[in-house]
Amino acid sequence: MKATAAAVACVSLCVLLARGASGSYPKAQNVSWNSINFKTLLTWGPPPSGYSYTVEYYEVNKDKQRLPTCFQTTNTACDLSMSLTDPKTCYIAEVLSQQPLGTTSDLIEFPYTRSKPFCPYTDTDLGRPEVTVEVSEDRKKTTLYVSDPLSALFRGQQQLSLRDIFADELQYKVTYRRNKSTGKKVKVSTGNVIELTDLDKKESYCFNVQAYVPSRRDWAKQLGEMSQTHCTNAHDPPFTSVYSVGVIAAGFFLILMIIGITIALVVICCKRRRNAQKSGKEGLPLRDV
Image (cartoon, rainbow, N blue to C red; front, top):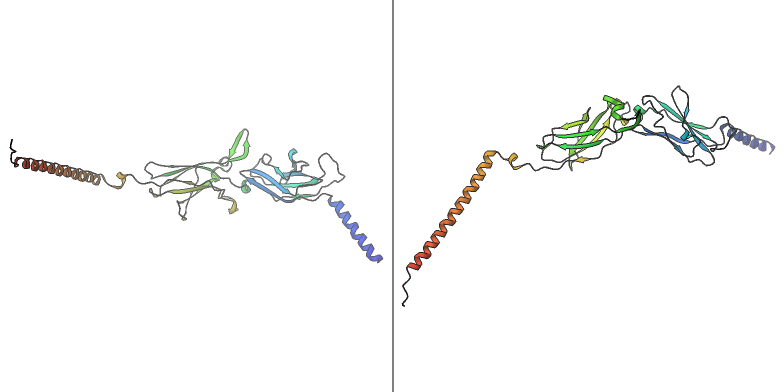
């Protein structure tokens, strides 16, 4: 019995020592990066109770930095968009569990959870572009005008677009199909004005556009979010585009001839009727006075 009690005491002491060494605050969990168009949030959990979180971030092999808005906070997200100023650099973040703001602690080192490296240039998700569709009057050409999505990064007072950041590496992938059809075609363009000339003039077509950076190693990150679907209207071709001028002229001539013949027949019939009535009256005997 004495040996058992001594073992239990020893285990309890080890647990207390381990707790004291690692701090009295639970570590952050599920630390992850969420980024779209370089708008970058670091998120984690759970919501703290009786303690707070502090975020430290740093470039690889450089000093750690802190944000005042993410120091001893009870939030579970930190916006680092304006702090990750070099999109082609990789960053690491650590979420420390600390005493509540305005209190003190005897701990020298606080428990923390480290994130995976985050490289904005290759890891941020690409947002949906804005698209305008224009069909030429003769319907031989359909043109898509694509606006580059804006990022959360600035150069001085100028807000940068994805084109400003990726330059010629940014392309656009167009997926199009006949309306109410499942068959799809794809065209990739390096520019913002995309012309399609292989469409059936009589048909309605639907279009989606995605930002596309094929230089990214991770194929899942190469394509961005699809734009809204834009559809053109079906078109009945004008009468003159279906029939030649000769056929149209012959048709008009035939119609005029039929109208002329009809009028002539009506006139002849009316004259014969009048003549018949006149002849009938002349053949009647005179009445006695």
